[in-house]
Length: 148
Image (cartoon, rainbow, N blue to C red; front, side, top):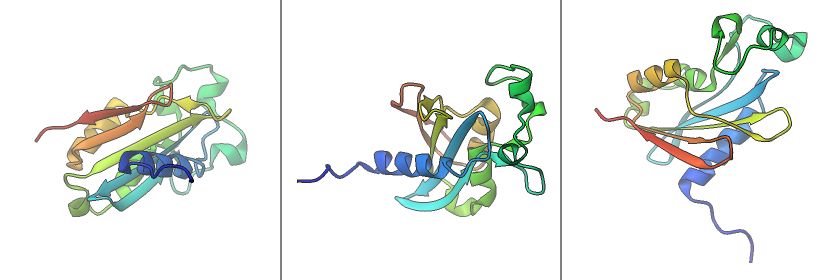
């Protein structure tokens, strides 16, 4: 018989991984899916803001050129995070009490830590999303719950 049917968390994390393939970042590719009652509300991936040049198109990443470690000097980056793009594109009412799934990968396809940064966490809370499911650096599923 074929592969076992994935759980909802596995299913939506795999979708987040697929969405990450649309990323325009040279360093890492992230995808996010916002879900409520197992129905997709919104998706997003990390990439340049509308109207800005994409790093993959101009083949330049200022943070990479300056060897800036992950999580530092975001002001030098033109990208909007996957979680932020998903929240921006989503209906606020439909996101309430939902779940956001986040998956990220390095250029070599290895899992990248996908726990939302502090700014994204604040945006997730303000969107009234109650649960975050993400992959850690080993590709293992992790959860965060936000209380009201």
